[in-house]
Image (cartoon, rainbow, N blue to C red; front, side, top):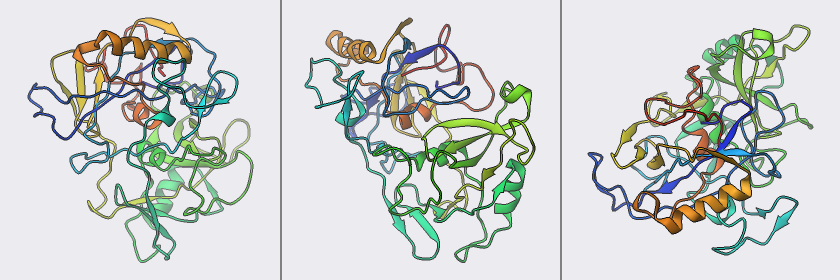
Length: 349
């Protein structure tokens, strides 16, 4: 859904209560809630980031998500709150608006399961929601993408020898949008240096091949600026090629290294799709028109009033929820076209 293109759109998200029915087409919940949109950064391969001023026209997309709590025991891909607690209009911060007011429905107005990390006091940090274990203090040296994969495959750290480079969805889960610069909780993670050079590799290769003049590229997360970008994979050469820090590699202590981030989409038959992995429900079709962020929030409010798909508590997804449905396999738009109706749309609020 979020893909590095020139056309942008809005998405709707909905939260499923525990009382929802089964996945065979019966009703999945009683409530939908609106959250906030995001804007693309100025980077040519960037994924939208939060905490910015929104002026571009984006496609309003009717993607809805529902969760029994995104981090419930039933979720195999649990999501957490972004940490954002400030509201905005197009020029500055504002007091969070009431229902019916302009700019109502921002990320800060809806709180989900908070991030929770524990300093293991042995050079590692445990994510208490996912049970992934992360290196606390990333190495100072920079590596090309394949060298990073090889490095972590042989690392013995904190008494563990099953470290790996995280996939992009796992890596983005560590991002903290509560303050900005850096977009990482430095109360538990150590992030040395300053400025915007805080890029970390994921294991996802950039399959489309249109970045950096067609040079082999792979995805990383910049914990300084909060965005996702495709970087030249080789690193250490002149020109546009870059080398990145080896990322803080996760280990899945609960599932013996099994990766998270795989969607489990179920068409519930009423114009909506359930992702059973996150417990989020999404609308299949987008609105088919471009709008700015303020208009996207108003659009969601209007859909609530009209009882879209029989519900009145839709919301825009937060940035972590929206990124959860991105398909990094190389398809365009970067979302499952067998599930979502994507004609004429490529990026969304």
